[in-house]
Every structure is written in structure tokens, then in C-alpha cells.
Length: 292
Ligand SMILES: [Zn+2]
Image (cartoon, rainbow, N blue to C red):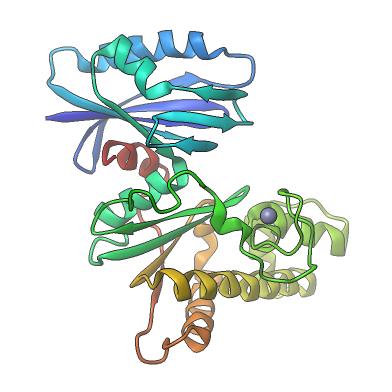
């Protein structure tokens, strides 16, 4: 029995025919502010129909950027694709006659990692995605806890780590996202050197010992750990998975972050929490969607 996962991002929507943790076939559609919701639905239905040909497909899952109401199957708001209040689960069900569920992309990635990736040996898994922004999800026993922050995606990035600190995209100051996102790393380095470099490149320079880059990396590590300490104190996961674009550089910070987290979380010395990199890469969205 197969499922179809759809990973909707700001530039494209990736469709995958999935069997457990394997993506057997992939299709891509363009998304963006100039592609209407109606047009997307029509094209998406065609892609789903093509993937279903001569196969038994039981359900469709959608991993989407933006603010999602999973209970209502609705994309509440996504600034990247310009959609507002779209009942995508009901609309796609009407066109494909398949049951459809939807959740925020960071939460779908967390679900995939918890079931098939870096969290598969654990019951309580927390994932944090460090990319353009900072998002994440908490998974318990292979499921997203229903009701628990179900409609408030992305809150992980807006934990305060420095009161009155750097200005965040949400309008507040001192959020984790203003320190631990790729955007924040780039901004901090630009402020110091005037140079506009990708976060990965900045971390490479830190590895090579460049002063400004080392400073940026050490600040990033400190604040990431501060944010995780708050998360771990509230959710008490057994493992924290680091995902998103910055995961590729995790060898440069993950051990130090794990050490700081266990030193300062309540009871961390007796019940240490693992901090590990994600394993599924960009397949996590599609696979996680099929686990909804
Ligand atoms: Zn914020």
C-alpha cells in the first residue's frame, strides 16, 4: 500500500510516491506568488492521479510552509506562496477522492526523523530546524501530539534567549531565530566584516580559524544551546535532532551544544539529552507528510 507525500515550499511543491521510508517516484510543480491556488490544485490533482495509476494509494499527506491548522486541514497563512485561509485538505479530497492531511513542514520533518531517522530509537523526540528561520516539532510515540501547539507552528524560533537583544523577524527582540537561523549567522558576520557570505561558508572560515567567523560561530552555539535548554526543560525529550540547512555544518557545533544543554537543563547531569544531526535530508518533508 502506497501513500503520496506533498512538500509545499516557497519555490516548488515536491510530490513523492512513498512506501514506508522510501520515496519511489518524484514529481515537481512550481509554486510562488504568481501561481494561483486554483491552478495549483488542478495541477496537483493531475500529478496525484498520475502517481496513482495502476497502484493502490491509500492517502495523501501535505507538508507545507506557513501557519497551518491541521485540525481543519487548512493553510491559515503562507507569506511565501501568498495563500490565506485555504482548506487544502478538503479541496484536494474533492478532486482526488483520497483522504488528505496537512501540517507545517518543520513538524512533518520532525515526524519523519522521529519514526525513520535520527530519532527512531526514542519515544520523545524534539527536532529543531535551522534554516532561513527556526522551526521545529515535538513527536511522542511516533505521533505529533494532537492539540499541543497544533496551530502555532514555528514557536520554537521565538523563544527569548536574550532580553532586549537582536531584532527578530516577528517584531520582538532577542528571539532564538535572531541568533540561530542561517539568516542570523549571515547578518552577524556581515555586521562585523561587511561581507555577505552564506552561513555554511562562514562556518568553514571559522573552522579555518578566521577571527570574525569564530566569534559568529561561538555566539551561534551559545544561543542555540540557550534556546534548547528552555525547550528541553519544558518538553523533556530524550533526543534533540538538529535539522535544516545548518545541519550540514553540525560537526562544528553539536558536541559543544549538547554539553551546554546537559550542563544547564534541570537534571541534565543525571538524565542527559542527546543532541544529534538529522539523517533524512530533504526527503523528510515528503516522508513526514505521509505519516500524518
Ligand atoms: Zn521572534
